[in-house]
Length: 526
Image (cartoon, rainbow, N blue to C red; front, side, top):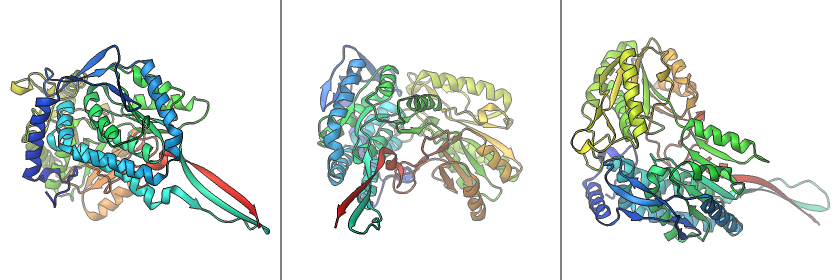
């Protein structure tokens, strides 16, 4: 595999060795790792609570993956105290030493890539390639802020010297950390969307408490062991769990938290943002709050590439990702042909156990979105036409999971609320427009502004980039109409209600959100 680099764009043509190593690791994880109890990690020590909760696999809900701790206010206080106690030493550590340790974490992640990838697939219901990509991306997101710290000399910048006769004046701009930082990560990208906030926080000198989604606490516990085993000092990285939202709320409300990174729903993210605004002074909040991502298809588009990109973007991770392609606006002359091509491709997708190589669509993570899918399809069948899908699947290996058929819907009136509501299920709506300006107006007419895609001529693509109100924009990309950003290639972030900062993860500016500037002036008499 010396010439192969795994990214979300390249994962469709992986070498045989990758599949063989994944399958061997999957067998090993199943034979040795399932059903165990796992503590929280606070001050690099296992901490256990009075009660536990189960993580089961969405692939088959009879598969017990692990038992996690039901944390309480006591554990929240312990974790925050550990992070705050570790901050003075970690924050004053040379940035070069922090970079070395964070890179060591990334190396440990890569050493455990296949085991973590197998566990990710079992815990999230994502395919083998998506799961391996999640872990590899996590390693790259740890390394990205290291690169930018080095390129900018740790953000110590000498400024002008005051013209004062008889005095020598040295002025510095120095970027410094905030303190104890909270990272709350979602179920769908449990490793990468934990590491993106943790990596940036650690490199810039903050200490961390991380709290995973209840459904994917198991894989994040395995991830947490990589931080411990890489040699981070006690208290610098802490991992807490809870079986409901209570631990997360306690952490967000804790006066010892100096900054927070949250990836999740628009509603919860805005609640956190408002809470932090009501404190005694402003504290940083880094948010990624979903999207309602549109692809625009011009009459000049390569329809083969457009159809492939739409299907890949709509149905990867069973539609359960913030960047999924959920709506498409196609110009009239190509509308019907695009519908036909997308429908044919969608009908080729295999739905089932995502650890199997041929499967492209796995299960929903929990019952509620599964029920939502049924409700959406019922309503849309009356508003437009369901070209394929529109039903759930319960047969064979799909008997004990929440499986939905990938669904393509056409001819829904463009004023229907589902054109602007984030659905988070394997369903894409395709509508007909008269012109590209009409398509752009509809694309921008939403509170979200995460990703978007375009298919058309090069000149049209330049117009598209000028007009679209999103943080991550793609043109003529068959690998995914609105998906597939990778550290070092594309920064990933949103505008408007999709992000609190609009600085893309993995890019040159993201980690700056985890630091604050101090101006230092030293005056000495000549």
